[in-house]
Amino acid sequence: MTGAGNAIVPSTPGRVPRSGNGFTRWLGRTLLRLAGWRVTGTLPDLPRFIAIASPHTSNWDWALTLSTSFALGVPLNYMVKDSAFFWPLSLFLRATGGVPTNRLAPLGMVEELAARLRNTPEIVLAITPEGTRARVDNWKSGFLRIAELAKLPVLLISWDYPSRILNLGPLAELTGDHEADLRAIRTYYSQFTGRNPRNQSS
Image (cartoon, rainbow, N blue to C red; front, side, top):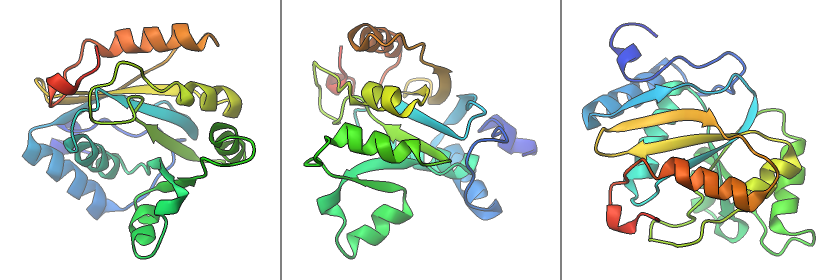
């Protein structure tokens, strides 16, 4: 990327999964520019990782993330309960990266998804640890279990509405102690402000 695009998004490392074309990358950069946002940081040069994003307080978070995905030329996958995959909604969900999950899977949803991810050569799985736009006191730790079982690193992505910056990174330093890791991750995200601060977890 050259010119004005460099001020909007960083370059995408070579091993990261790619999607789209010149038009979709231009569209993503244009949407971010019109919204007054820019993307900082960098993606890890890896073909498989989990990307958690916070603070999630608004539907606008999804719009910004989709625009960033287009601008970077990187496909994002996200979890959706399998019962939502009915026609015609299933067409939209699959086109935008939806991954069906079965909460009643015999091995458990996390274990079943992790098993699939271990056999997926390229994937960026996007997760919001709050699990909702509403204020919650407890974050979901499922992404840490998925990362551990599927042997995937976890990238920390932040939305900061006062500065209008979506930041990529850093990678979380996971210890295997899920409670301690979750506390450290929440502490990291406490420096950022969502669109609706009243919905933001403390």
